[in-house]
Amino acid sequence: MTNYASNLTDVISRKVSSVLQELLETKHLYQSVQISEKDFNEVINSIIEEHKREASRAEPGINLDGTPYLKNRVDKLNKERDALLYSDWYFYTESNPPPGVPPIGSVDLPPLPLPSVRVSCGSKQCKGSIQPHNSGFVGLRYGTASFDFQQDGSVIQIFSFPYQCQNCKEDPLVFLVKRDDLKLTLVGRSQFPEVSVPDFIPDAQRKFYRNAIIADQTSFTLAAALYLRTVIEQYFHSTIPEVEIKAIKGNPTGDELADLYAKTLPKNFPSNFPSLKKAYNDLSEIVHSGKENDEVKKSFSAIRTAVDGHFRAVQLFKQMPTQ
Ligand SMILES: [Zn+2]
Image 1 (tube, rainbow, N blue to C red):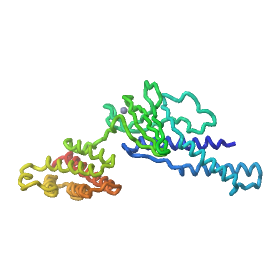
Image 2: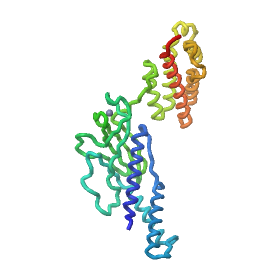
Image 3: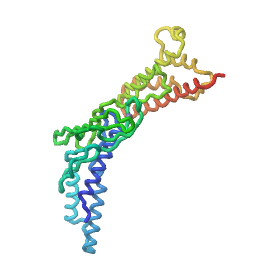
Image 4: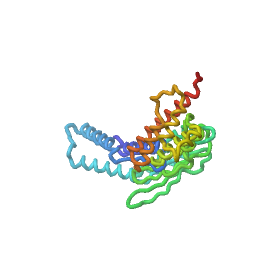
């Protein structure tokens, strides 16, 4: 006979592991992933279908559809699902597996192995590149820690998950993850994720470019737009000959700087390449809109792509032999 409970347990365990992996690999600080009770409708339906098939094999011609018995089975499975989903969760690392198997008949989710993840490593050797990280680390003496409590009927757990880069095996990286019922939020990281700034961004502008990326990743899009506009503005100032800027009375506007800058570009610089003038104006529009939402975030991404395209083209032209 099929072991229904263990089937449901397996599917829920795999789901928790996979959303946790998604959280650690793709989300930034204070972003979340969510599990829904509906995610398990399919497995519950398949258990019910299998149960119906078994019943009709045992007693040909029997049809359980619409019977109180079947309804009761579904209710029971939903209760089992909730008991597993809303129990306290425990995780263990590869280096410290749990001491034994959970007792038979336990209604809690069994301890789950922490998934391996691919995240950036900020060590001198790895330089912010994405590397495989295994849970636990060499010399780890205890398992993972969690702080568990109930708040307004919700299960709250705050976990600390140690990981180690498999490329450099340097100091462990510890993630802090908050669970609020079925929602997991990344609330801390012992090392700030290294942001790799493309090499075509000029040296003097790299710091603010990096800040723009971090602000964007943490959904402070207005700050991101301001930082990226500062990158462009400072680059204008560093490229345009000083006398030309001084010739403008008062503070030069972005448009005036952009026009002077355009004159410094090589004559054969294609006019259909992304222009910094447009990027500057688009970023100003974001700053003045005072809005921070998905639409603004999307347009920031498009502007950043254009700015990257411009700097990449400039770098390319600098490398080309002059005629
Ligand atoms: Zn590393």
